[in-house]
Every structure is written in C-alpha cells, then in structure tokens.
Amino acid sequence: MSTERALAYAEVHRRRFLDELKEFIRFPSVSAQPRHADDLVNCADWLAEHLRRIGLEEVRIVPTRRHPLVYAHWRGAPARPTVLVYGHYDVQPPDPLREWRSPPFEPTMRGENLFARGACDNKGQMFVHVKALEAYLQTRGALPVNVACLFEGEEEIGSPHLLPFIARNRDALAADVAVMSDTIMPAPDQPAITYATRGALYLELELRGPGHDLHSGNFGGAVLNPLQALCEIIAKLHDAEGRIAIPGLYRRVRRWSRAERARMAHVGASDETILEDALSERGWGERGYSLYERLTLRPALTVNGIAGGYQGPGGKGVIPARALAKLSFRLVADQDPAEIDRLVRAHIARITPPAVRATVRTLASARPALVNPNHPAIRAAAAACGKGFGTAPVLLRSGGTIPVASAFQELLGAPTVLMGFALPDDSMHAPNEKFHLPIFYNGIASAIWFLAAIGAAGELGAERPAAPALAAG
View 1 (cartoon, rainbow, N blue to C red):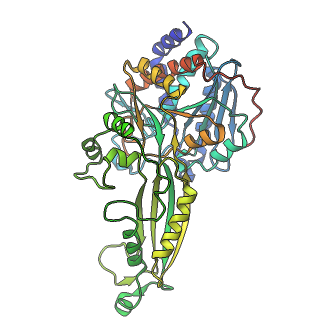
View 2: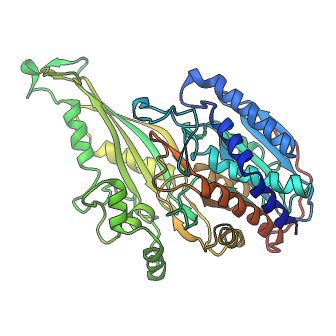
View 3: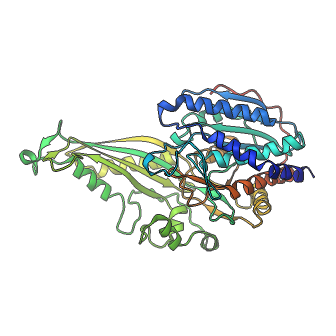
C-alpha cells in the first residue's frame, strides 16, 4: 500500500515536479568554465535545500578544490538494504549557442519534450530518483530501504575529486547497491538497463623536432616535419583489418560465448541503426564483429584531435617545430588502464623516428564495469522498469565510460544499476538537448518500484553498523 500511495503522489504532483526541474535546470552549472564557478555553488545550495525539504537527513555540501559535492542520507530501516543514489548536477558547455532554437538555460517545452542544457544529462535523469524518494517520504514518512545520495559537480570534467572522496569515505558510503541514470534507452516505450560499460584512457602525444618553426623552402626535405612524423605514428596504431596494432593490448580481452553474442544480436542495435544514428554510410572497424559488438565487446582507439603547423587562410611555407594529437582508448572487461598506458608508451617509443622527440601525457583513465545480469539488483531493476513503463526492459552493454560505476564496485563492493532514461536523439552534449517528459514520469514510477523491490530482496538485506561521519572533500 505504501508503494501505491507513493505512485499516486507522484502522479498528482507531476506539474510541480516539472516546475522544480525547470528551476534546477536554470542554473548554468558548466563545470568546465571557471566563470560559472559561482553558478555551481548556487546550484549545489539549491539541490541541498531541496533534499532537506523532501525529508532527507544529514544533508551536507562538501567543498572540494573545485566544485562541491552534495550528500544526504536516510537511514531509518536498519534491517533493510542500503541504496546509494548517484548523479551529477554539472553540465556541458552549451556552445555553439547559434545552433540552439531556444536559450540553453531557459527550459522550453516543445510538444512533450523539455529543451535545455542539462534537461537530460543529468539533471532530469537524476531528478527522477529525487522525486521517487520524495514520494515515499511525503506519504509514508519513511523509505523501504536505507538511502545515501551522492551528487557531484565535476562529472563533465572527469570527476577529479570524486574517487578520492569515495576512497576516504568507504564506511560512510557503504551500500548494497548503487543506482544511477545516465545511459540510453532505445525508444520511449522500451526501457533499458545497462550492465556493462567500457573503461577509458585519454592520452596526449606531442612530437618536437627543430627548435623553432622553419622555412619549408630552406629546410623541406632535409629536416623531418614533426607533423608528418605524427601522422606516420598514428597510421601505425591500427592494422589493415581495423585492429589496434599495439602489442599486448588484446591479451586480457575476454572472449564471449556464442550464446552471449546471440543475445546481444537480439537486443542490441543493428548495424543499420548505428550507421543511421552516426549519419554514416559505411561502418569501419575490427573484422568478425557486428558494429554493436565493436562498440561494446571490443576495445577501440580514437584520434580525437590533431594540432600543428599553420591553420589560417591561404598557404604558409612552414615546417612546424611541434605537433600534437589527442588519443582516447575504450577498454573492455579485464583490461587495466595502467597496463594499457604502459603498452602504448612502449609502442610509441618503438615507432617514433629518431629525428623527433615524443612525449606522452596521461590525461585521464577509468576502469570498465561489468555487473552480472542475473544479480538480484539487476533483477529488481528489471521488474521495476517493467512496472513503470508497462514493458520489460532490454539488458544492454554500453560503449561509453562511467568512471564512478567501476569505482562503486571496486571501492565499495556495490554493483551499479544503470537505469537509463535518455533517448538516442536527446542531443546530450549537443545543442538542443532535450528530455522526453513521458519518460520522466515513467522513470519516477520505475524508481519508486525499484526502491520497493530492493527493500524486498532478501539476498541483499544485511544489517550495517551506524555509518561514520563523512570526511572532508
């Protein structure tokens, strides 16, 4: 009965929930741009006050060296499981502004979609869980589980302070399961739960040659151009069949059974759908795998950018003194970013021409995450989404990276349930980002059912000692 009352409360208060989401979105909480630092502080203050108002306890704003964390908990069910709810309130820059049909931080309704930066990534999806908590607390005065909320303001810049914070607060953040919503569902009427994400390694490769830029007429053909050498190195990072040509990189890549690949072919996106979403006519990559398998089961190396030499209009006869490339790796289950980092550095050292000097800088890394699809928390989430949306969810792998998902597994021993509420065309990170409101409301219902299902999952119930106080950010 308490779940039914929570569901009824959520339905009655839909209009207010939408108004509050709009208020939340209006904060231009762009973590990458220093001029928005005060906006992130103000957004964190608003979120903390909102959590207090809906009935959560021990609400705290935890300062870091950049943007604050927001923490809250409710621990009134000592014999029940503990759920850690994660989300992020920071957003991507809205640029290019000229491509927006409406101001990016003025939420605008068009049809059943709410357009604004952060509407989907991640304020709207995060708010789904906040409203589910409110629905229970305001009708029952209690939750069916213990809950800790951890909302950060640095996800879009790589979460530099989150993982150290989690490591320092393992006991305070101890949970049976973590839940977050920052992934994709295939269609408005087809919910999805993601059980695997790829890891990541971001590197910067710099080549230096002459001590300064040179006249190409005076030195062309006599001095190796660092930009040319960079292109030659990049060309040697893949073989002719699309495999990454770095010795040892595939050593830990897991081989999957025919049954798993058949299941993925049944539920995953087709080659045609992936190419349509990419606005591409032909696929590319490692032979012997579908495009969906290449995106999820196999590692990938992408050149994200190249800089060097003259970039202005017209020509300029110059040999640049330096050239730069940004590289990113997506890593799969069992691959260790630190090991891949060492392999890449060794390979680049082997293939760098002696006439130039190579420097490799590590920018960021994250481990892959994999949860057993038969884990009780995944089963609970599947049942909850089935009730919230009226149809069973599909279980998907993601080609993307969510660093905190692996951190919760490794540091807290808590599997992460990824209940994605974003559509493929929601334009996350792009102009005209949107959130489909029927999904917002069905997502709240699913989150309500999820809390109930976890509370009833006997396999997860374990009484925990009182959590210690949080350490500083």
